[in-house]
Length: 633
Image 1 (cartoon, rainbow, N blue to C red):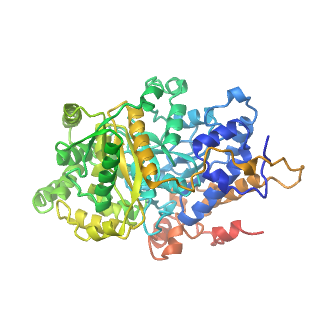
Image 2: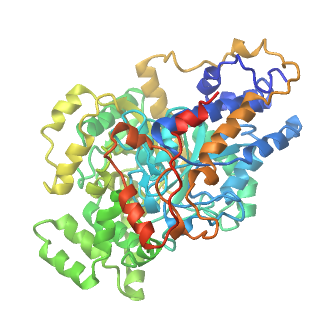
Image 3: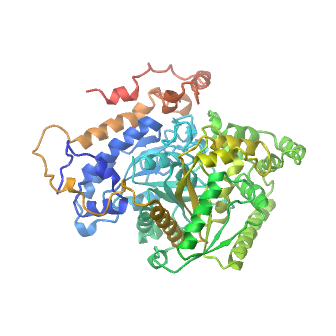
């Protein structure tokens, strides 16, 4: 090999700066060692976690997998050979919990890897950490009573979005180069837009969802999907190509055998692009509208045709179909999973509403029909559909709406659609106060269209000034809280969504690439983006002489394991009582949020009372802060 297992003087920064396509090529050609790359990302992931609290588990088997990969001959190496990557918490990894942020799923390690994880490993990827999520995954904040609050690395007072928030943080700060998220109402796209990265919500059933944990299963109207998250469009393409191998259909026959269509992605034919600046349900922030205007202008100048598009019956789609489909059982399944658990503040308002008797929900819905119509419709949706007949009718209405939307699409003769993403990032605690803002993302889970997010600009001081005049379309509490949530965001990223019809994921990626290329061209060359020339720092390195001291990447594995391993993460587990009620949900070291504001987001007192009431064992003595533990000589 051309480099050592780990060179003490080797600066990991050039490795972290390499785009995925170039890094994967260097790994396959042995221009970089597997150990040096994994070591660099382990160290960076640990650093990012200390700042933002974004990780939930360390996958210690990554070391064994690395050693197995080294035995492969060159022609046996997959396209992701040696690439370290992160996984969202609900992806099953054998021997590890997939908690979804709830105590019922603790201490129930998966018996095998999820289908997607198996394929990624077969293609050479090395999953090494799992990332944080909101409790139940049904929130676009990123907080739960088990692992705490994750912070946005670009502004520690803001949320990174959810439910794939930990992935967004780790990728934005280069603690990972590729990640996998899930999306029920924008859970890939919201963290991507809040953190300034790229994400793809694939067409439902294009990728296997077998082995991905979920609090609420059985939904049909609202489609939850898996999808990649990365730092550029080419990385998403490479990941999707690797996933859409023949193994996908072999391991999960319910997924169609449909390889990546390179000819669609690589086409240079001009596109006819529909666009809108507002969905007519949630007034966009000034930066959201400006991002679409900017992108439309660039596309027009590049020779593409753009035409205005309007969404049919958006309120009906969001309240009756999306919300009605998500809570068709009246929230019964969700509430069952939360029995005996602490409810995180980020979802408490929603859970309190679901716990009301159905008769009271319907009465309050009637009372609020004219005073607060959106809350009224939420309460009606929270009551559930009632009977199987009504459920089938709801499914039929969703299918009819999808056909109505496609008919409008076809009438304009458009190939793809360009729309605002929801941004900039919200202040922590505000996602639960502004649930209707996700209309920009949730609609396409109802329609089951592939959608990608591309960052195109940042919030300006002029955007902030215009925000002062924001009123919203309804003038209700949701609109008032939206204005407060996005304030104070100068410099934060703003993205757009690129949308295609079902099963046309490659066309969606093509529009993403076109937008990304034009935006970067307008901004000019970025000195931080490395070129395709080989890095000279790697050419002169030779393996060091044998030493009894373990390589640094092994030491980093050990350090990360000490912080992330369940044994250390949950010091209060009683040996004789492995049930969740015997656990302390207080983190063993100060969370990132504690360091910013010791009074914000705390649950220890309430947690302690709850545990004492259940007869939990006494808490273990407090340990030294994590940063001191890992920095000991």
